[in-house]
Length: 275
Image (cartoon, rainbow, N blue to C red; front, side, top):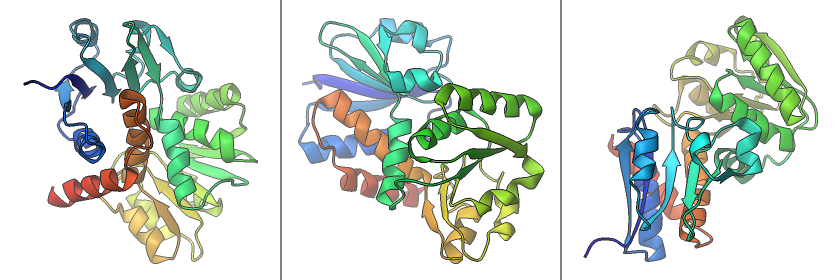
């Protein structure tokens, strides 16, 4: 007999996604034997057609790039959190057929930091200015009492980050990427750039670093995260973020709470170790 409830992660590329591992581990722990979670390669052009074909057995979707903004016009409503950064990574299908969007990246970041004892900081730095940086800024707007400095590669990116700061109600100062080593003077640094981008900064980690939140999970540890840990600094990694945002997705899609954080993290760590 086929499963009665379906969920999946969509994006392009999608083969690397750990989401199936995490969600399936949650279903196993929660005893949801009639649930399935898959991955589908879907780009912006294919998204409307994909959504229209989904039947009432579908509970929800996880979305990765490039769909987080493309999905918004296709939904019946989005949460205030998702609206704050114009990005949806979670879609839940209601019993009456509506499609509702949310963003669990932002509360997931906060939960990952809280797990490492970071509940409030006086100032913070962000390395990068892409979509993840705006989510990081939204998270920081809730726990940072002072301003945030964003280290970026272009004036256009600088303008974008300052604009997000105004929208999110947090003071954002921008600085050139060439000065990124100065980011480490803040008690919290969030690295949101692609793999390899921050490797050259590892030599600049101070003797007594604060907390580093590096959103990458593969390869792990990054060169920067390794240097940070070697100097005794606290490190929050991309798997922490991935697990915490997935916990919130599982709870929303299944209606079961709390989702099994430890089992999901263990499954994620095992999957990464096997790669």
